[in-house]
Structure formats: structure tokens, C-alpha cells
Length: 147
Length: 84
Image 1: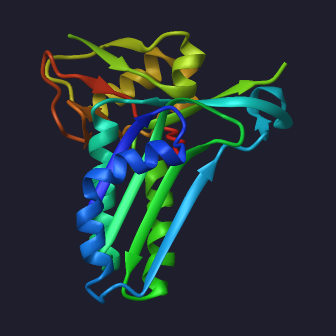
Image 2: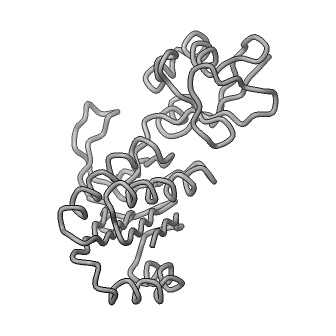
């Protein structure tokens, strides 16, 4: 199963569950077919302290990050990257969700969940996906500073 | 011809605009548009890839080098991407 989606705002548990609802049957069937030995879920969270490149890289407090996407290339790029990583690492399933717009400190902006026969594939797939996300998917973040 | 290039992220903030225009010859390649961006918009240099190896998005797909840009194509500078 390969599923990738850009969603407006923070990735709350409710909105993630809503996004995945359409694939619930497919996931249940995969989960019970006996081929999955490991699942790994990564969440990117907006942290408070961030270096400000316009202030000599001094750490400042953030209020939020604003994520800008180049549409529809960002959605297509996220889908293509998910499919490519799934194939390269022999995954049974990959779900990638990314925020568009404002995400506050402590909120989730990125979710990646992968499943494979063994843990080693899942660990490698998550690292590979995140590296390539930053190279190939047109999503930018802008700091919204506190004060 | 003139080519309008969409810009994003830090490049857009620095230029205080979401697009810049370059003057180039007819049917310019990606390499030529990148070279024109370097020459005509030096303030964007921090965000510009080298013309010889860099890429642009043309009609929402990455294109490099000798790819020819036609009138009406949507051209975008995709650099310094920072998702996740």
C-alpha cells in the first residue's frame, strides 16, 4: 500500500485517522497476511527553539512554522517519493503525510509510517525518505518567531 | 524572449516577490535560464544552482541542461527545499 497526502494545518490524530480511513480495509488485510515483521512510525514535530539565519544563527523561540507547497508538484512529488522508497526497500506499506500552512510549536507536521518483513528495511526506508524529501519535494518552511 | 520564473521559500522572501523575469534568447534551455538568473538577479545567487548541473521545474517536472523552454511553460526554481 502506498499512500501520500498533503493536508492543510497540523496533523492531529483525528485528521490522520480521517486521511487513513479510506485505506483501512487494505491495511487490515496487509496486517493479517503474515508478511509484515516490523512497522515504524516517524513524526516530525515543530520544536520551540530554532536558529535564526537572519540573526547570526542565534537560537530564538518559534511560535509556528508556515509550510509553503508548490502545488500540484508537491503532492505528485510526495507520491512518487513514497512509491520509489517502497520499491527500493521492499516495503509492504508506506504512508506519508505532510502539512501545508501553519503548524504551531508542539504540533505534528509530518508523519511517515512504513511496514516491511524486517526492521532493517523500515529503519533504512525512513532515513532515505526524509533525506530525499528535502531534495525532491517542493515544500518550504518559514519561521514565525515569538515576540 | 522573457521567461517568468516562480520562486519560493527564502528566495521569495529575499526578492519580496513570488516570481522574477529574465531576458533570454528564443527557445532557451534550462541551463541558459539558470545562467540568466545568475547574471540578471545576483541577489538570488544564494538560492541558485550552477547552470551546468542545476535544475528547474518546467510544467511541474524537474528538467535540466538542454531541456528547451517554450512560450507558455510554467517555470519554477526549486531549491533550498526544507520540508519535514
